[in-house]
Image 1 (spheres, protein in one colour):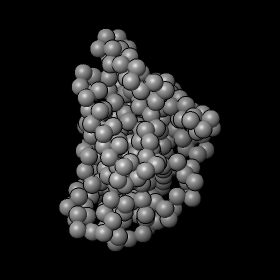
Image 2: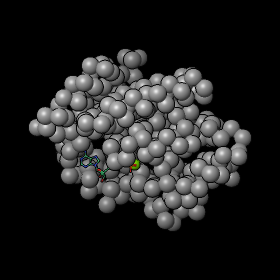
Image 3: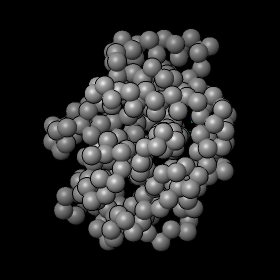
Length: 257
Ligand code: ATP
Ligand code: MG
């Protein structure tokens, strides 16, 4: 059975997509079979995986509305060696169109159930909000991976997210857990970042990944080539950090934690 993770944080620009794309490529580099689901109308994970969102006739939008099979929209990321269920701006309409549809929260879950056995990991890149798209991600997942920047308001945002996870667990998906918290764009010279990081470890203990993602220009420029940084420059600090994260994650899975 695949490990299904929703990469989520309602705060924008914290590194969700960078994490989704580079973790997918890093897991694939260790011969894991990976599917990346783009659940954001911005389509950044799609583009960052080398798939042109503007040319797609069908996307995750059509899957959620039950208009097509997930296999029909699935594409291969040749630059990352994993599969992608792509998205583009059309997905923005799903939020409204899903409201009147049966089982609107579990549409993605049902679609993934049909292809789950083909993968070791399924990563879901969520949009920066707690809307119905994100709820679909949270219902389909076994656990959430939360990327966050160690800034002043980060902990406040985190407690909102933890509440949402609890609500989804109580009403929609009893198995949902917090897989881990990932410190992104980390600058060790920044005192505030160190303080927030220490608080995070105090509150969440082992849930905080030991791997820290540094601020790294390769991670920022890779999307413009449609290649994960792990494929563009494996030796860069950013790529190395995501490869280490994949290693840490596989170790955790092996140890059953
Ligand atoms: P959104 O909420 O809009 O979906 P996001 O949480 O997915 O954003 P990203 O798109 O991954 O965040 O990152 C935001 C910006 O920061 C992007 O321009 C990305 O290239 C850059 N970025 C992300 N992580 C790093 C990093 N470790 N070092 C440098 N730049 C980074
Ligand atoms: Mg994003």
